[in-house]
Every structure is written in structure tokens, then in C-alpha cells.
Image (cartoon, rainbow, N blue to C red; front, side):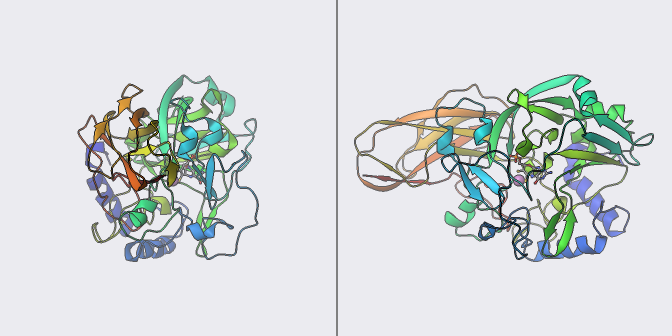
Length: 430
Ligand SMILES: Nc1nc2c(c(=O)[nH]1)N[C@H]1C(S)=C(S)[C@@H](COP(=O)(O)O)O[C@H]1N2
Ligand SMILES: [Mo]
């Protein structure tokens, strides 16, 4: 089936029809289990995977309600409290810790989103197996050396969790959501170096009939509410796979660190973070649509504002802004300080940032410190001299080159994805 990126909803509807007729394979998960998951998602969106309710802090975030996983670190790198806020198996970057850093997020403070825990995968023994009926021939294997010998590309891109900013649905809009209660720190920008997925797929003999590719991670299988969801994996339309996706083996000039998917991960520009599968071990290429819980029950929009079976699977991220300041910071009155922050958009370069220091009454244009660029963020600043004491809110509002501006409220969905509204950042002037 030819796939036209310009009509993703039609593609998705076709996929659903094929799946309902039993023609699309569910890629490793029993179809009845997926139907159950679907039902859960449609009813309440409450599976709680991907998410790890904040309450699951001591156990595995992927298994709320299940026996707590053995306690212990889920990352290799240290997660000091000045740099990170721990949320279950995940670590959120403290935006205040980015103040004074450059346009790239240093690896020591890049957020980590792990469904289970970081596996140790040795580059020497690592193989990428590409297989499936969307190839002209049998499986093709790539060693680390073979991958590194391919033409390399380098790109500066953000990876952002689809649920970044989720907690503001509740704290700012009074709406319940399931999932990790991120503030705005589930994003990082890095310089990625790697091979093009398109080169690898062509070497493997991808055919014109291929529809989906399904990269799987080598981390542990995910158990949620007693259902084994299998390895973390999410189908990617072949049109995106052949367009701009990287198989990255370097991050900010270093070999890709274990916590960020080393030795090799996918980097899928502009798309929700779950697309960028870490520790990729195999890629199925299929001539029919594929499903996993990560494009059916999760990573769609559910709720009254959305279709009953959920939206199409999420693709592109949205736009946001954040101050490099603790939420609830205390600042001295009559003292001028430089407010700093960052704004980013997946749709187009950020062209304007406005800041309000009086809860949204007046807006001033912030000074931008980076040239607007697709795939990255812009750093900005604005001096502020508070004149009165008491509680107030700082607001930052970005506009991108496609003309989109952050709205006052974000359209709710039960799993709290794609928050894009202006955040009211609480501060107290003393
Ligand atoms: N194999 C695997 N890939 C994965 C994940 C995971 O748990 N396992 N998490 C995904 C999610 S939800 C996000 S947001 C990004 C986070 O990338 P990071 O941990 O390098 O910041 O990785 C994605 N890739
Ligand atoms: Mo994510």
C-alpha cells in the first residue's frame, strides 16, 4: 500500500480496518491482549504504562500495581538532585540546571525516560538485524563497525517525551491525566551522529511494497497490569523511516552513552520521543501495517475531545517554552535579574518569544540568543526588576515560523500528551 505522509489519518484508518479484519499483525503481542488494551485506552486511557504513575516512585514505573521491582538505580549515569528530579524509572532535567549552558544539553543533565532500566549492551557484540516481508530477500545483519563505515550524518535535534509538561494539565487546568508527572524537563537537545536509517534499509533491500518498519529495543520486556507488552517498540511509517531518521552512535561528540541508548539508537526528528527507540536490536520491515501497544493504547489522544477510538498515532511534537528557574523560586524585590529560558517547536523554527512578569497582564519581547533553527531550541533572556512583594507568575510564550503561538490552554487528553499552553511559572518576590 503506498503511503502518503500528507494523509496520515487516511493511512491510519486503513490500518485500523486491516487490523480489525485480522490482516495486520500485532507484532508480538497477542491480538486479544491488544484488543483489551485498546478497550482500556478507549474507556479511560488508564493503562498507566509509559507513564509510571508518580506514585510508582520506588518500583518500576512501567508496572503500577505490580509488585515493586527490585530497588536500585535504573541508570548508569549519576542523577544528582541539583540536576534531576526523579520520577519512577525516569529522570527529569531541572531547567534551572541549564542556566549558563550552551545550546546543547550536556549529557550529565539530559533527561532519561526508561520503561524499565538501562541495559548494558556491548558495541562489539551488538548486531542490528533487519528482516521482514518488506525486504526483497532474507534478514541482513549490521555490526557496529559496518554501521560506522556507512556515510555518517550529524544533526542537532531535540528528543522530547510526548508527555512533557503533562503535570500542567492538572496544576494549571484542573484536569486529571495518567502518566509521569513531568514539568517541562523531559526534553534535551544534542548533536547526534550516525548512519541514515534509509541507507541501512536500502542495503537491506527494502521494497516498494513496504509500509511500516518496527524497531525494537534490547531493554527488558515491559509488564503492565499483568500483561507482558514485550519489548519497547513502535511502528514507524516507511515514508518517515526513509526520510530523515538516524541510527545514532554518537551524542555531543561522545560514543552514545548507555542511558541514552548506546551503542545505537534511533533518532526520529520532530516526532514524539517514544519513536526514538534506544538500544535498537532489530528492525522488522513489513508490507502490511504493524501494531504495538505504543501506537494503539498509548501515544494517541483519548478523551471527550477526541475520536472514540483515539486519535491517529502521535507523530510530531508541539511547541513550548521554559524558564531556567526553579518552579516556586524566591526572588528579591528591587533587584534586577536576568530571566533566561528556552523555547522550541517541532513544526518550524521559533521566531518570537514574549515574556510576562505580571501574570499575563503585560508582555515584552525577549532577546533571542540563538538563530531560529528547525529541530533545536532558542535561548532567550529578559531583565526583570520586581517592584512589589508577594506571589506572582512568570509566563513565556513562543511563536514559530509556521505562525503558531502557544495558546492559553491546551486541549485535554486523558494521557496528558502534547501540552502546549503557556505555563504560569510561580515565583515569590520577597
Ligand atoms: N528501548 C527503549 N527505547 C526508548 C524508551 C525505552 O524505555 N526503551 N523510552 C522512549 C521514550 S518514551 C522517550 S521520551 C525517549 C527518551 O530518550 P532519553 O532517555 O535518551 O532521553 O526514549 C524512547 N526510547
Ligand atoms: Mo517518552
